[in-house]
Length: 119
Length: 109
Image: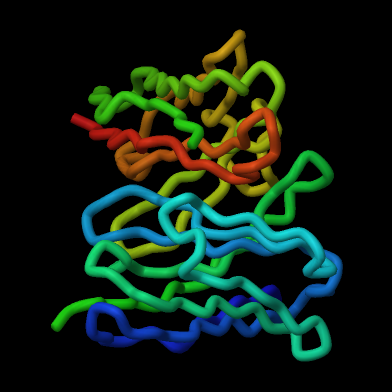
């Protein structure tokens, strides 16, 4: 069974940092590109960042570029998101997502972890 | 940045057909994917590569593409189809490999 389990969310003050983790199981993690997607309370889905299967190609949404860093450890089947200089508008549920692509329909989401940025 | 535009809401009576559009300049060149999200749940893929349906998704869900617009059609809408729906695609340059549409709330009357 495919599982994506996020952790590391919580309450943080503006300007602070958090590191999210996503533990993957039930599939060959090293073969799949991964994404972080977030959803602010009552709002729509927002793609945050992408990392290729090897980690060699990375993209960020403009809203987080320069503040967030995506990484992965294929030996540990884990995906990470280092979030620095957090702002109130970063408050959201953050999902780990392996998404369908032109090469296949493999598509799974984690349950999400809530990040709240507030003083 | 790149944007995908959807209508905020669609209302439909049970048994009728709901059509949700998604517009974006790169859609003639990039595949679209559609997700259904119910309150408090993670999204679920209902259409991939414009018109393909994953296993386990009811046949009443279908997708189509024409120029800069893709459409999700739900035929014979059921009460359980009430949810938010998001299209997802990429920009033509590859800078934004995954962009979500603005989302459409489908209400079953």
